[in-house]
Length: 297
Image (cartoon, rainbow, N blue to C red):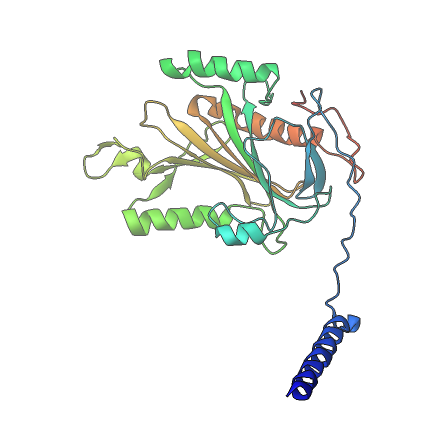
């Protein structure tokens, strides 16, 4: 009996040793390869007087360095998930390292129409903006600040004009609302003007009381006949606003501007000044500024 017990115990010990050796003797060749994390050198980035770093990337054609405190919100890069994307997609997304070649999809800023400056936090324009909000808006006075959104255009197949957009808007107005947009004889500030049914509500025979579907529409064509500027303006509101879009071929961008209609006479100056602002943010591929940045704190 004792002999049988010892034999069973010996077999158990030997079996345990075999299992132990098998567990230790693993094949290294079967281990999953470890990812080698490549260290990407960080590009030089300009800073403002407070030590804040610029936002960098490539907008359309050119590399830019946007002064800190200028962007209203944040810059979106090509490939970034949208605002309403699935949170799981956002969590998994890894943006490529920021460089002066990383394409910028869009960003926004505030532009002061009266002098061509931009809003920057921790600069006098921040104080000016607050002052104008408190002293002009409550009293219905024209607000001299325009909201600007800039969109890089990277699809070579998409024309840089509003030819289709304008035609389609007119078509929809006719088919859905039975409104004909009629070109006016006299241009306005160099713009060709179209008014809904010549500005008359056909049901009443009087001027429109509402401009929800009947905003004035204005265009400007280039020498080739392509529509490069498209503006829609309210005309029945307590405060009438304009939604202004234009393309710039040199930059390969589309720009949206929103402002009080009283500043419509300055539409061309706005376009020129916004391009001047973007030009001041241009850099070479190493991040060296090509001029003095407008809006830098």
